Length: 83
Image 1 (tube, one colour):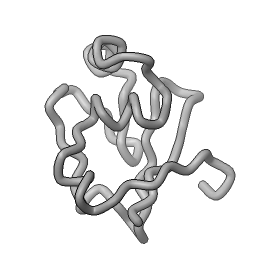
Image 2 (cartoon, rainbow, N blue to C red):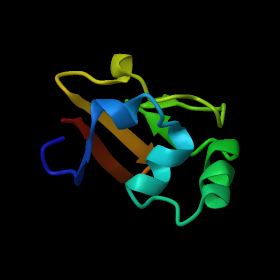
Image 3 (spheres, rainbow, N blue to C red):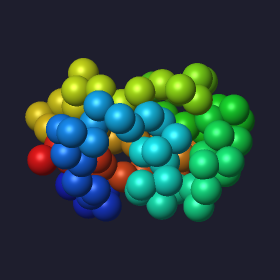
Image 4 (cartoon, rainbow, N blue to C red):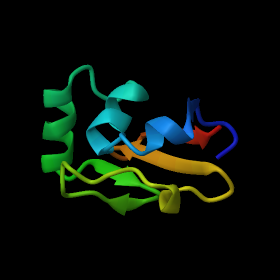
């Protein structure tokens, strides 16, 4: 996980972020519509758990040691770092 791109997330932003926002923040989707299609297609994951609901919030429970792995498909991965 240390070699993955890392993106900082503040505690204040965490309360407002959902999976769509997370996918666009890390650059896996250029638009909210593209992020929605990724979720609908089964390609979005948080900590290797598939996300099927577009409204899934990103919460503090998703972070382990201050980091959460977000993935799009099988080859694109990044870390959200709580800061």
